[in-house]
Image (cartoon, rainbow, N blue to C red; front, top):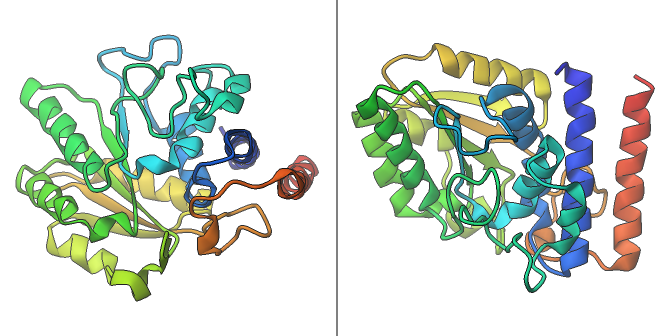
Length: 278
């Protein structure tokens, strides 16, 4: 995909996020929207995956460590063809396979059930280590929240990843600077994030996580790194693409009402129209 196609796809992913959360009347739009460009790049450009064969042995693996941003992952999987986009409207409904957090037993394309913060990266490290031990060449990607890295387990996993020289592992931190209680530097600052990962012997890349040129360059660079895992620190805008949600901690875990849904979809329609004229 070229950059324009990626931007258009990410906008469709954002529409799916807003639609799913509105339909559920609950969920986490803010961090799903901030990470939409990264989700899009991973699933439409970076990863070796096949929607027709979601469990193929040599596929690349993805673990959503910040599992509450499931609407972002689900919308990406749906747009990539793992299941119908229409099913996004069943998010969190009784009987739906699209639960509030990713479930590997019921959702095509989900490699790991996640949601308990801090634990996803451990699973990803285990997957990457398994590939090394079995001589497989698949790569493993995991997306963490910047509030999530306040969890100690994240650093235990990081220590092991570097010790075992897991150059098939890419850790992405969605650094939108907001968690449920407010700004991360006011709640329990993890800054400087890049220096911490460097201290754990990661190859570190800092990017604007809402810029496809920088996202593309970062993942290409990660593929050249040997002997150490890579951490991509992606500076993003929480609620990206929806005017009233951007940079508002209150939209971490709240659903738009009908009126707000209309405004949000109009915002995204405008973005889509502008992209069509480029």
